[in-house]
Image (tube, rainbow, N blue to C red; front, side, top):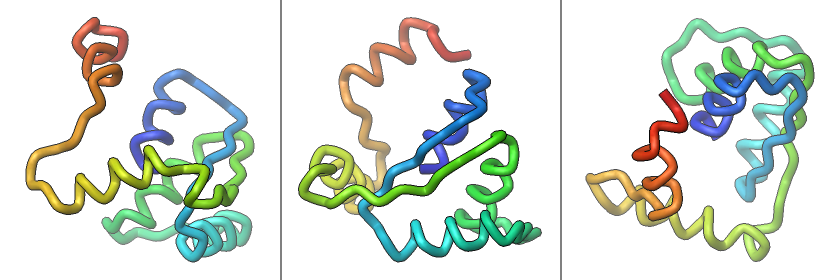
Length: 100
């Protein structure tokens, strides 16, 4: 989610909908964002909330895990491996220099 927000910010998107199959995290982020909570901590949640403030509007939406199998599978692999997991199409995108 953090990386998705970073990419959206780099591309200067103003309105954003972020979907997650981790409903508990989504609810906490949504509630904190709507309440205007700003955290000075350096944990993942605080980083996401700080970055979310850069957008005119952001919605934290839920997507059932069964409809999010590819993202869920990549996340599980990343947790189990020390090296980052990168899909081939994403790797080609970065190698082409499309993002600096």
